[in-house]
Image 1 (cartoon, rainbow, N blue to C red):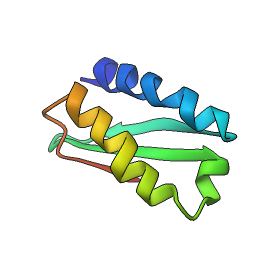
Image 2 (cartoon, helix red, strand yellow):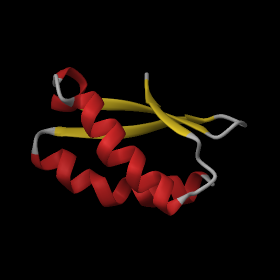
Image 3 (cartoon, rainbow, N blue to C red):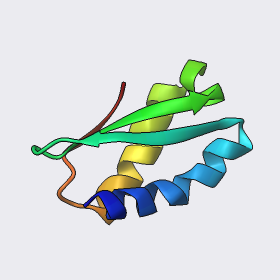
Length: 73
């Protein structure tokens, strides 16, 4: 599952990097929670939670349906 989540993240990275940010996969729990660390501009952006839920989480769930939730740590 980790490889599939990384491939999904590779689809959103160019968008994040264009704004000076990035995302790092920290952990995937046994109950399907993906933990990410937003980096660069994304780490302090007031819109980061919207980007996380409406962008990153949506794409990850499309690519890896067994993922239940995506959270930033």
